[in-house]
Amino acid sequence: MSRDIVINATRHESRIAVLDEGQVVELWVERTRHRTIVGNIYKGRVTKVLPGMQSAFVDLGLERDAFLYVSDVIEDLEEYESETTDELHLEDVGHRPETSIADLLREGQEILVQVSKDTIAGKGARITTHVTLPGRFLVYMPTVNHIGVSRRIEDEDERTRLKTILESIRAPGLGGFIVRTAGEQRQEEEFRADLKYLTELWEHIRRRGDKVAAPTAIHHDLDLILRTIRDVLSPEFKTVWVDSVDEYQRIVEFLDQIQPQLVSRVRLYRRDEPIFEDFGIEPEIAKALKSKVWLKSGGYIVINQTEALVAIDVNTGKYVGKKNLEETVFRTNIEASKEIVRQIRLRDLGGIIVLDFIDMEDLSNRAKLFETLESEIRKDRSKTKILQISEFGLIEMTRKRVRQSLERSLTQACPYCGGSGRIKSNTTVALEILRELMKARDLHDGQDVIVRVHPNVYASLSAGDPIFEEVERNLGVHLVFKPDDSLHHEQFDVMGV
Image (tube, rainbow, N blue to C red; front, top):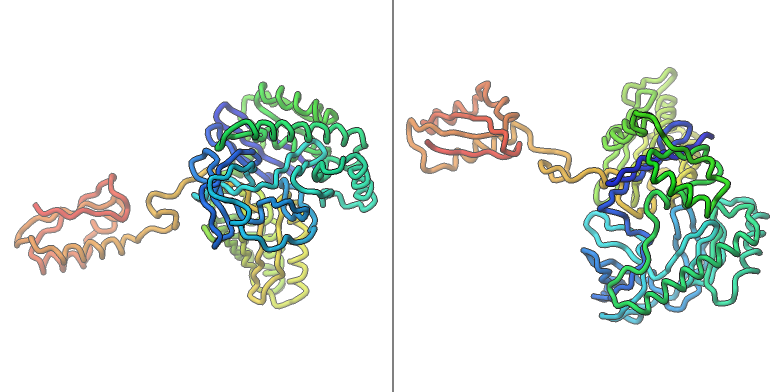
């Protein structure tokens, strides 16, 4: 499989796309003024402890206090069950005993925390005291005692070899480590160098944390471009294209330190045509902001993102099939499942996701659909959990949400509909005008009454609505409708002359 990373970098914004066989499968955007804070380490001050919610709020010096849940507070425990980076998942190592947040924290207490989730939908950032520091081949967890290997390294002999190396080079009480995917087939000296760098970095962070008062930022993670090079780039990628000379040099220097064998794959894009236009990424961004996605067969999927969950509906659309209904539905569902996973990755959708496939009677077809979905979802670096197809043809899944989705990052709430996606119809507005006129008490016979409306509503009323002819007769007035661009579609203004 041919894979590429395409980077568009300006002073104000960085955009990165991952291409599989020329098709965009992942996309990240970071604005200079709104950089993600995920991975940053702060010395914060506890502002409120809520035993009833088993959580606390912590002041990090940001606009909103961050949210800290009891399971994210270290109490000298060796058990640890969480995620580290997008590509790494710790294996289950037990469950912690029930502990009240009030026994662990008090208001005014200063603690060292790391941001695990950005501010999303107006909620404060999610934080943890489980600090994780990613390196070239290792992720260091100084607060826990655990050794693990990325689940993407599947060979059992290699997993055993890597664990043996870690156990031999890790000093007692040093903390926990996970081998990243990039660590596969690496040798002991390379892990020793990574371990030395990460432990020294943690010692520097700890010393700085001891010296400063809360709330203060102690450590900033890399920006989007270098973070992608560190966390995503691997030998399976053919090329990294970048359209900025400065960023090209920065990437080469960074790779020369962490993965020198991949330096030759970084290429400077020199053409006049914008890089995202040349690679066909710009149209994909435009499509990713629309709710309807057409399939090649003629079917389509509809994606609706709400505060509670993401709902994805599958429809046959123009596809009528060749044999029978079951075969048509099955082919549509299979094609849709592949596109759904691509859209989930591309749009960076997270939280609860409900997939409404077209119902199939054949149980073997249901099983094949679920297998296809599972196979496709393995390509996703984010942690996901999928439930079996329900009797109604629904599949429920969860996907780890770390930052805003692409839609939330690039758009804002509609000033007309308030985010609902719907506005009042012309007829509804017309009937509201009617009710307002009928309530009027200061009108007299022969009076001109001016009604200012939005041009779209005016177009439907100017043809002569019989309802308003009846109002004129009953009230003895003359209605004059006037279009006004400054009005919201649902607004109107009634004035007697």
